[in-house]
Length: 634
Image 1: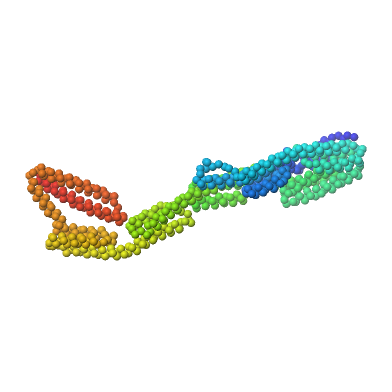
Image 2: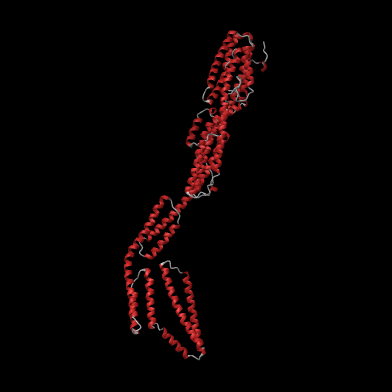
């Protein structure tokens, strides 16, 4: 006898509940006939997309944490070796993606280090070419090979799932055929049980067909149990066995309601639902009751999971806002104004504080977490690259300054034993001035190079001081001797015969020249005193013949008086001589304007120029008087 197909309106209470549950949101409890099992990476059940997204998000939380800190090539190779030993179907796609992200991080770190070395060696960054290491190329090839094996395995699994679908459809068809054979129920029941076990043993089917297959299988079993006049004792035994199995699942579901780990409870619940669907029907009067109990326990677990998921989303949003703010804060920092080690160290503390703050935040959403990390790392890399370039330039400058100061030390050491006191002193003073113009050197060399330079200078000036002590005593004696000669000039008076006075002056001048150096600060003073006294004596005694020359010139003019031609020619000669003297005087006066008496040599030259200028003025005065005398005769 054929039984009509059941519409959803005619389904028993448990079936109607299952039919309604299929249309609820993904986070609500799915029906007994539906699957919530996570399917393969290459197929997605549209009705479970929301649940899968939440499950994958939780899985990604662990993967994201691993991505945050890059592995080494060696560790990455070891992890990859473990995955290569597994069946490609057992390797999650997220794991392959995570390893590729790790490899990209390693590549970036390697390129950054090579770029820094390239710049450090003075190369133009525009000429830098990115390359990959042999290890990186090998790992990349292995990852590509694994992805290809996984794709090939996924294709094989899809073929297997299709074959499993055909086998399960055949089992369902056979159960329906057994249900229609109402006259041989005792003979077909063992086969019916075998078909159920066989159905449960068949592997996965395509995800898009899984729910429909389970639903048809459930309908076929219920049709066999409900619509056929089978042996009541046999059917009751089957119902009781199914009830006991479902009661055990119900008890376990109730325990999961109070499980502290929400994720463990949720995933375990999926396993319980898979087992529930494998169990056959129970007595009609108990179906709705036990299903409602199981459904209620499941609803509580799902609510807890949904609450956890929403709270996690809220935390991710907060973390995203916090990490974005850190990125913006670090990106806004201006490194161009940092021009000292202290300033860079202070900025480094700011960056390290930002990194510490970053670590205190949890993960952002799966979509943005890696992007934010890459953005933050790029901002930090920008700082540390700028810092490395500054430190390199500073090290070069310090090295250059050190080379200059070492050169000054060598030059000072070459002079430290010199006995040419004046020349060596001037050169060492110039070296000290040059030292002040050279910038700083590295701290570890600063004290040593300064002590070396100072030791050379101190050695020279100490030797000069010791030599100067004996020289000063000799100069003091010379000064006394010259003062005695000046005092000896008082012995010459206007009453002294001219020849005797001249001889005395010659003797005094000869002694003066034989006396050595006097103290430098007394040199000009004693010489001026000597010259003044000497000039006065010569003037008083007319030793220079000034008056005699004037008288001779007057007599010569008197002889040619009346001869205007001779007078004019003499006047022209005197005028030319006068112009020459005036030009010489202007030259000396100009030179005096450029000379400085800040040094000993400059002071001595200044005095000599002044003496020559005074003599020129006297000569000019004498020539002017002669010209006036001739003009009075014309």
